[in-house]
Image 1 (spheres, rainbow, N blue to C red):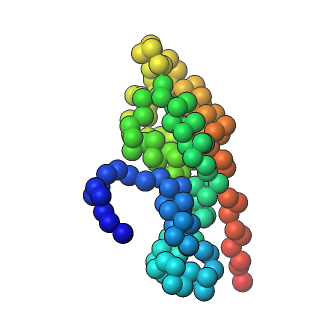
Image 2: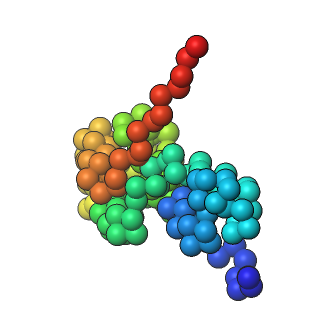
Amino acid sequence: MKIVKKNAGVLTNFEVIDFLRSRGAKTDPMGCLGAVAASECKVYEYLLKTPACNQTRESIYEFVRRSEGFRLAEADKLNVINWRPSSAADAYAMIEECGRRFSRDEQGQACDEDERVQEFLEIVREVLPPPPPKAEVMQE
């Protein structure tokens, strides 16, 4: 493997899953032997429990296109794509200065911040697939 350009950009969790899959990563530790490092299998196994496991390139491109009016920074888009907020509290935690950014519409006019957050979350729900169901923790 040859590094063409160091630190060329960030990757979404979906892109990491896709890359690891192309290298032969599997959830079965014995199936991974020789194809990829054990640590790569662990990363792959972890990422399969995140919203990224159900995403497609098309859904990510569609989200980026439809969220342009919200003036999100690249880091904010990355957080949203990776973690798929499902509530206003999630959105405020993930998006830097969410209140300030969402208090204006695409034309720069003042608008209801809460309505804009809900509009944004609706786009997230429509475009980004839901995360996998959480496995039940067994209690003794």
